[in-house]
Each structure stands twice: as structure tokens, then as C-alpha cells.
Amino acid sequence: MLGDSRYTKEDIIKITREEDIKFIRLQFVDILGTLKNVAITDEQLEKALNNQILIDGSSIEGFVRMEESDMYLKPDLDTFEIFPWRPHQGKVGRMICDIYNLDGTPFQGDPRYVLKKVIKEAADMGYDFNVGPEFEFFLFQIDENGYPTTTTHDNAGYFDLGPIDLGENVRRDIVLTLEEMGFDIQTSHHEVAPGQHEIDFKYSDALRSADNIVTFKLVVKVIARKHGLHATFMPKPIFGISGSGMHCNLLMYDEDGRNIFYDEKDELNLSKEAYYFIGGLLKHAKALTAVTNPTVNSYKRLVSGFEAPVRIGWSTINASPLIRVPRGRNKNSLIELRSPDPSCNPYLAVAAMLKAGLDGIKNKIEPPKMMEQKELSKVLDTLDVESTIPSTLKEALIDLSKDEIIKDALGDVYERYMKAKSLEWDEYISVVHSWEVEKYISRY
Image (cartoon, rainbow, N blue to C red; front, top):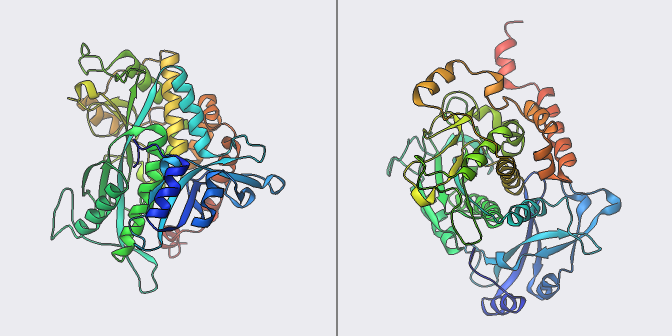
């Protein structure tokens, strides 16, 4: 399954025949991280395995112009899975694909290629980057027309259990489905806000982790719908309660499988490389936010209160700093980046995180002094622009435009990404929102 399996073309053809798989979905994402697919029948499988399935790239968000439209899908054989929720007869499988140009070269605007490029940079330095995401999401009721509402499925709180936690059975089915698809689930529980849930799965190498994130979001939405609910990864769907994040636990190994972030002699069991990696993340934090928090709504979550990570700093405390270093991990020392949210394109977000950290290691960027509890309480009262991450998508995009390291990580995607996100911002500021009507219509 995911992670350890290594399929050949012959393996996949054999499994497809033995498992009575009739349809295979060839999946990929656009620059916004939206999952796309082309469905083929089992009769077209050999053609797909030989990288001969064409798509029209001009119709995909942020890909190419009309005159450059035709592109090939190249399936990653190790991502082959059978969807457990589909029929037992005439099953449905899937493979995640890379995008290739007609001349056989990788399409450099493919988010998966963007991540592969930065992974290679790390590999050339002798590093294997691993990511373990912690996913938060909401379950909402659906109206009589099948559209999602903002009425939560329950009124439970942090770590509550049934019968208060009405999402128990939904999470159970999600976890069982994910495990059937090869995920190693760590924990699942009700989160702080009503209708909010968290599921964490074990870290894996950067590419597989990004693939897992895409798959995870699909599974959660499908299983929630089977329970008559809508699952959303919108960062802040309701004012006044906690938003949904996607904290990322970051680890780095050398070629011998040793955790390079670990040093038994250090008080926090962190190595110099770990401190430099933190330094790189903090140096590029503002530009990084444009990628890890890519929507207008992302910045409604990133406000003081609700334990939101707004301060550009690091600590062992799970509060406002951008980075937390969990204590007691020993040889499993890791760095937790708390700002990302689940609306991000995981391939671009992981690439940007890794690039920022590598810059820290290459240039031996020392992080600032660790923030203590007494400092944190003062900081929350005296936040300033320089010490905090951007407060709007527009500010984040400006910071991204000035950061050559993160721009280099995005490569050919940068210009298209900036254009798409700038249009999103322009649309947002031109719309009259309900808050404005409630605030001003009677007053003026």
C-alpha cells in the first residue's frame, strides 16, 4: 500500500484483473491544489501505464496557454489504490500522476514536479525530508437541496466522546477507510469547536506525504457525504470559534536513516541543523504564509486568540508562536510548523517549507531566542507588523514577491500562482459582504 509498496506495470494489470477493477481514475492537482482526474476503463489501463493518456492543460487552473494545451499523464505506480467505498463488482482504482509535455519532459508548472525539484535539492545535500500533518476539519449539516450549511453536526468540545460527540461514527469510518488504503493513523478526536474534528496520520517522505494529504481530503469528504454531512477544510467557516489548521511535523533524515534534527547533548535534543532549519523557516515566514495559507479566509483564522500561530518566533509552548518544538521526543526530535491550513496546495506548501529550511541550513541562519511563557503573554498585547505573519492574503502576496528563495521554490508556478491569488483578492475586496450591510445600512 502507501509508503512501502513498489508496483510494476505487470502488478497493476494483474491486480486490476483479479480484483475486477473496471475504472481507474488518473488523478492530479492544479496550482490551487484542487484534485482533478481523468477516468479510464480497464481496457485503457495498459495505454495509461505507458504514459499515453492526453489531457487538455489549457482548461486546468494555472497550467498553460491554449497553444500549449496537450499534455501526458504519467502515473506514479506506487500510488495505485482501490477505493474501498466503491462497488465490490466493477471496482474503482486510482493512480496519482505527474504531468509531462509532448516532448517527454516534465511539465514545470505541475505542483508535483515543483515538490520533486526541491526534494532533489535536499537529496543532493544528503537529506530525506519527512512531513506528518495534523488535520482539522468541520462537519456541517446539509440542507434539503444537498447544499452545505454552517450548522454544525454537534455541540461537543475538545476530546469529548459520544453521545455528545456525534461525529464518532463518521471519524471511525474515515479512519477505517484510510487504513484500508494504507494510512498509519495516529490519533482521531473531537476538536475544540462544535462540529470540529482532528485526524493525524504518521509522517512519511515529503512526496508521499503530499500525496497522502490529497487522498485524505478526498476520503474525508466522501465518507462524510455517506453520513449525510458535508466535510469542509475551509480554515475559518464560523466567526468567533477556532479555525481549522494543518500543523505540520517536520523531520529530516540523513542517508543512513539518522534523524539529523536530534542531538542528545542539547537541552531540547535539537541539533545545529534543527536550529538552522528553524532559522530558515522564520526568516521566510512571511513569504511562506502566501503558500501555506493561500485563501482570503485563511487570514480570518490567523488572528490573536484561539491559539492561532501569529507570532514569528518559536517555543516549546503550544500557543501563539509560529513554530513549536515538542519536548520529550528524544531521538524523534521534530519541528512543528503551526501556521499551515488545509486549504493549501500540499505540493507547493511542502516544497516552500523545505526550501526555507534548506536555506537556513545552507547559510547557518540562527533563530532568535526561544520565547518563554511570560514573554508570550506580553507579545499578544503588543503585536506589531514586523513580528507577526501577514494579516491578509494581499500582504502575504507582497511578501512573497520580495522573497527570492520561496519564489525559486515555486519556479515556473510562481507567476501563475500570483496571478490566480491576486485575482482572488481583487474579487474579494470588490464584493459587498453581509458584515458591511449589517454595520452600515441603517447608520448611513
